[in-house]
Structures are given as C-alpha cells and as structure tokens.
Amino acid sequence: EIVLTQSPGTLSLSPGERATLSCRASQSVSSSYLAWYQQKPGQAPRLLIYGASSRATGIPDRFSASGSGTDFSLTISRLEPEDFAVYFCHQYGSSPPWTFGQGTKVEIK
Amino acid sequence: VQLLESGGGLVQPGGSLRLSCAASGFTFSTYAMNWVRQAPGKGLEWVSGISNSGGDTYYADSVKGRFTLSRDNSKNTVYLQMNSLRAEDTAVYYCAFSRGRPYWGQGTLVTVSS
Image (cartoon, rainbow over all chains, first blue to last red; front, side, top):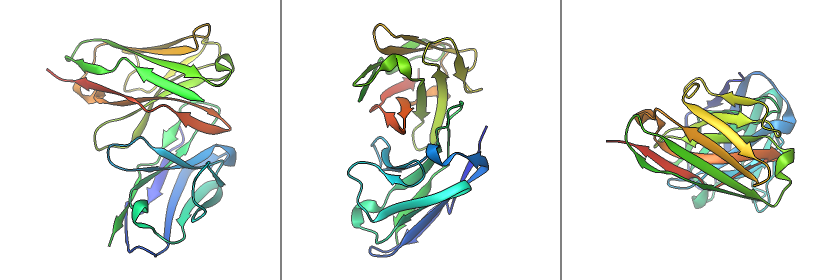
C-alpha cells in the first residue's frame, strides 16, 4: 500500500499570499494517477488536479501542481478568501487500494 | 458522468445496510468501481473496490469480513453490503471510479448508533 504524507498539517496564510502544499509517497506513484482535492465543511471533496498537473474543469489557473515519483506539490499562487479549506492528495493507481494523504488545512492568518 | 449513491441512514450497532451506486454517462462495465468513506471530522479512507467484471473484489482491513462489494453490469449499479456495523463505520460513503481522472458521487451518510 502506498502511504501518502502531506505537509504541513496546517498552513496559516493571508489572502493574496502564495500557498505551497506537499504530498510525499512511500513508493513511486505514476504521475497519471495523482490527484488533489479541496474540501470545505459539509461538502464533498472537489477535484482540483488530476494526473499530477492537469487542472479539472472550471478550476482557476491560480491552482497549479507538479511532481513525479514520490514528491508532489500543489501551489495556490494568490490565496482568495474562498481558498481557505482542507486539501487532500490522492493516488488512484490501477491496482487497489486507493490511498489518501491526511490533509493540509489552509487557514486564514 | 453521474454516480448516485443511495441506501444510507441510521442503523444500530451490529445491524446491516446496503448501499447502492447507480452510474450513468459512461460504459459502466469497462471500469473498476470503488467506495471511499469519510468519518465526521476525519480524512478520506478507501473502503473497497471491484474489478470491471466483478470477478475481483478488494477490501480495507477495517471492513474485511463484514462488507461485501458486488456489481450488476446490466443495471449499471454497484452494491456495498455492510454487516456487523460498528460506531466507527459512521461516515459519508462515496462511490468513485477513475477514467483518466477520478469521478465521485455526492455521498450517502451512514450513522451507526443506538
């Protein structure tokens, strides 16, 4: 099973600042199968990024992601008020199980 | 693509519940299907997966022996039979699959409580 470890656990930033979130895998993940989600309280996860770097439909271009192998990152270039939420990484390779990071909370400083 | 979960609700510890996920908008029989859950205030946990034919099923250790995943490709539906439910099974349960990107339903809430 691939273990995904996200850091930091909490990121305290102000609107307009840049956020960089990390997701590290215990073994190599195919870049085709790494996703990032945003989740707000009471809502289902919202897909932001799939295939390590492809933005999902309707996702603003202030969200970008990169990485390969065991190290992946999500960057929010300029935080908007609606971006304060929890972010999860997810590997959805062809062989089960799917696994998820524990989440990074981006909170208003 | 649409995934519509149903069957959630309140059940007593030790009870059973069957969740359904009705799929549309894609060739259902081509894709493996999964269930993922999220307990209140917690992260996401993969629960179970089934191959496109239904011949192979996979389970998280936390549900192995209690949950059974099946599918009916003629009805474009996947079923999660949950037995011997425990308080720690309380969660929103999501049906999901991947076709280049992951697709998720909106979830159905299962509450295990007396």
